[in-house]
Length: 100
Image: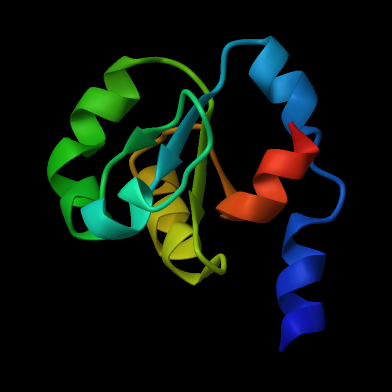
């Protein structure tokens, strides 16, 4: 399963996305986010992504989602892509941090 998850994130140029103004959304709980996160990221827990999806679409920016392992951010990415947001699953926030 870990190899499958890693393969999902292979090849994305997150540094390039960030240079072009991408926004990082951390979909972990408020408590998880407070215990450590990527500087400059915004915390929108997964259960609130749907209710805030129109605001994220209106940003007209690439959205990179992250969480603890890549599972919740994968769910959030699918939700946003379904309404036309240019969204990417960045996987775990610690891993994403090293890629930006």
